[in-house]
Length: 243
Image (cartoon, rainbow, N blue to C red):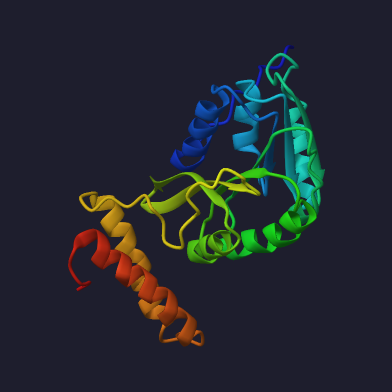
């Protein structure tokens, strides 16, 4: 009996936003040669990218070995013509990846917290100081920690947006390390905000409430510092103090 070909994974709003951004970029004059789906968990995004043939090579990476083992088994279920480009999968610390400087690379980090992303970035960019690397971030939590690191390291902002899935809001940040273009640097709080967008206002209120609560905890001083950024942002985009 012939087994049915597995369908391409369904992508929720968060992963679909990343997919559509990559799809749009890959249709431009200078597409990425290699896409790296890092901290990939089930690999849904990477499998969809492979199915659509949106790169010449796709690398799956996660530090949890059994997740990569499970992913390899699922990838074997697809026929060669379903997954068009070449791919590889490896279980290792993403911060220790060695990127081919002869190819244009996009490293995708999603589904983990911003603090964890910073831990990955520090050794990675140090190892590739002379190389330009593009990143696509979608942190699940602690977005400010990631943004502050990107701002301090002068990552160039290529695109950013907000996506909502199941009443949770996620920031999407497309940024470049080692740019010589002199473009806009990633900001600590973001440049995507629209004063008349109710979802943006709701999300900003959530961030303010979160850091207000944190001022009652062990990290009171740091929480108060970050809260100040978001309160000033609220006043800037609404032209009135936060109430």
